[in-house]
Length: 536
Image 1: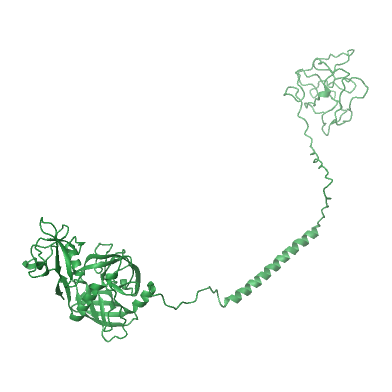
Image 2 (image 1 turned 45 degrees about the horizontal axis):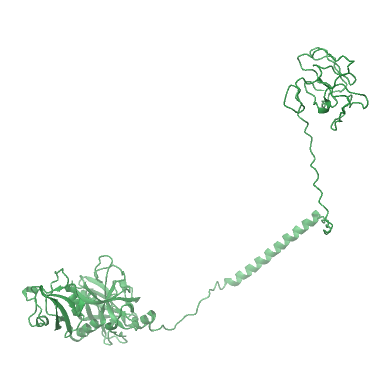
């Protein structure tokens, strides 16, 4: 037994009362811990310990009490009440026999207590105390077997799994690997073959066959196809200036109509060249020009196969009609744009700037949202029947707000203006026949500085001349200086420029009706016949 190591007490090894005829008294135990008594289940001895060895003295020389299984150990303290002898003592199933120490002999009667009584009454496995038991020995626990499954009499018999040998599994894996290698080789050979077959031709994508047919006459493409052969592109040099524009063929003799501000730099001297849609270029000369209407006629000579355009009637134009504009914006020849007529009878005044000599034109224009840009000037505005209904002349520019197609380089903002073909036809005929254009006039001088509503007749004309020409249409109708004209043919007139524009839209000799206010008198209506004024 190890010194100082307490034996494990059990509930069945409680101390019992000694026989009455024996002396239960023993000398008091010294203060040092008493030797551990022998029990019916001793603690495991060290490998070098001998069960029968009983040394006669302690290390300090004191006499040690020798204990045996036949002599009860003297208690160190008064014995506690023992268990009655009749109480059976259960056998310890975990006890391990040790040489020299055994279990109580059956039939030998009550056994004496095997250890001194615990004076503190510490129960086994209770709270630690001076004689608290050592922790229980941890023994390996074998898990219980799983519960048996109930037998199903109707279940099919279970087939025993066939054992797979290591050699069988290795053969199966080898077969799978070999099949994968063969499949990879076959796929690679097939891919290489297909690639070699396609290497010569490359990838061919599906495509619709070419359509060389024409287009319907009313479509934009149909209108462009019918119009482009008669459109020309004009390049002008002269007076230290250079510019480009557009025009179109009027007849087989080579007359071409364009804007005055396009050819004005070469009015006195310069060079004008014309390029046709087929690419041929020819020299041209000025036949006549009209700054007031911003129109001019030039001519090419010795050119055959010309394609004159058909002139329409601007009186038939309605707001919302589709139109196509053709020209060379920014020198991009053959440009086709489309839109609609967004307004009619739009009175505009446009200045030719440096190229037009600063002359102002008055136009009762057609307004369109077809994109028109610098270089489109003089080009045709076509209707759905491929007929010319206007001459593209001006734009409302986004940069300076001036409706000047020549002096401004701003792009289109959807506000383009064209001279109605009816007015352009009359002026072109006059320029071709006489070299001069005749403007319809009322025979009065308009006060352009008047800021009130209407067109006011000036108090005095240019260079001291009378404001109302004696014997002219206005004088014959009773107009006087200071009168304010508010309507022409029932249409309101708000400024002097609008009065000129409304008048220019007519032909000399036409009858018009004016609404006039004289001082505080009530407005009156007068009829007059337009006269003519030659310019050139």
